[in-house]
Amino acid sequence: MTLKTMGAVCALSLGLAGAAWAEYPERPINMVIPYGAGGATDISARTISEPLGKAVGKPLVMANVTGAGGATGSVAVQNAKEDGYTMLFARVGSHSVNPAMKATLPYTLEDFRFVTVYEINPFACVVSARSDITSMEALIEQAKGDGISFSSSGVGSGPHLAAAMVLNAFGVEDAANAATHIPQQGGGAAATAVLNGTADFLCTNSSALAGFVSNGQMRALMVTTADPVEGFDAPTSVDLGQPDLQQMVGWTGIAGPAGLPDEVAAKWGDWMQSAAADAEFVEKMESRGSIIRVMSPEEANDFIQGQYETFRKLVDDLGMRIEG
Image (cartoon, rainbow, N blue to C red; front, side, top):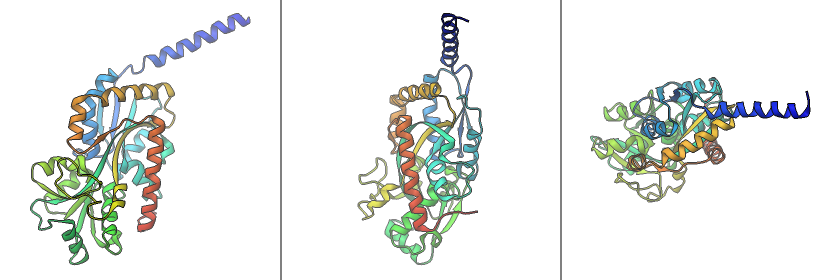
């Protein structure tokens, strides 16, 4: 074969490869939500699904694959074919808190390729509107006295760590064990536990709580920000003398298996820029206290790694590492 012929063959091969990836996606894309209906991840995923689906040009098949604090759905994507047809709505709990807390987690951050983080939101601490607890001072007083309980979306989840972090910040001794932890299957169930009186309080993402606060079912006691959060008539952690609680924020991103091709990742970057610019999506998310910020894959990976390191230190300080 002459050099000229070899060059033509190589050019044809590269052209065909490029054409193949140019056709992605050729069919619907499975989007795994690793938490239950009604939680922060589910709300975020389903809110962006319409503008994202328009940008992708193919149907997005949304599926809640729940269990193990987000690990079950995450593993489903970790083990999926690396072709961009199974993607994950990754969350602070599944990819910052879980890796920091669980020694036997069946995945690491390196098992995924993040194509973006697009939403950041503060945490809020809430009680039922029927509760006798009307302030963080009253909540801490009860925690130090007769005892208190809190719900979460699962052992090792963001709300689990958040509650312990808040109690510790306000001077509750042995904060990781001082309150009764009542884990639930997802954020929606965690909120329901507070509403029906099964648990006294919940600290979780503002986006998962905004509807309950606005309709008068829940009372917000604090938001983990320096500035007030729209829709939450509550003091900030800075107002209450606890600026370190600003470290506790939620985020939502999208990831595929570690071997996701560059061409696929690049397309997701373009789609997310388009979807997150949708005015209706932005309005809905900002009304829940979320900040819309689309990160590049490089920015997303740096951000998530930083979150992991922050929470790993907190876990070690609070003695919350789960070894089994």
